[in-house]
Length: 215
Image 1 (spheres, rainbow, N blue to C red):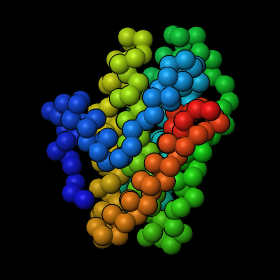
Image 2: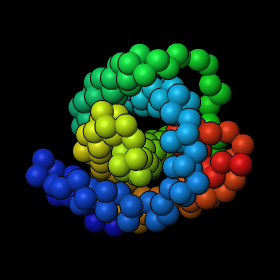
Image 3: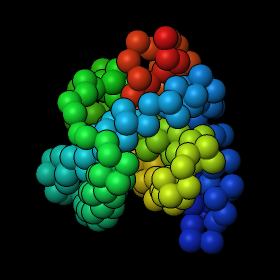
Image 4: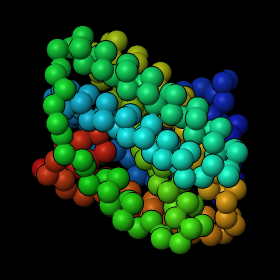
């Protein structure tokens, strides 16, 4: 699969970014999830904040583990800064909208993806990077599905996130390809995209930012 850094650039249109993400993921967010999210913005925002925090924590974990990979260090340092800024911004929206932070159980999404991560050193790194790419891409796809239907200020904010989230997924994919052969990366990517498809399209008892079809 060719890299697509030209798509996620400073001059790329939002539509081009979203089209690239949707082609990458294969399956769209179900309308039932969007409808449920619009009726439960409190849970959506709390879990969105959790996701931004966890994304930053994942970046820091990779920085700590792989100090010998300079390009990973640089890209993950930028990602961590941006994800923590997003975390702060989501907290601000929660405050404005009167949404109190409350504990939420983690969704099955990231946990299930990580269950397939290999344990050998090279395989583990490549799989973690692929999982990171898919999570960021799915986040971007959901921002695109939501923003036209949200209250004006929140909708504008979600739309603004499309560029950074699109770049994050590209960064993760680029790092995966730098650390293994293209054929091996493509095979693992297909495996994890299949898991993503199953999780997004199947019934899910818990509503979360990355959950499946609400029951």
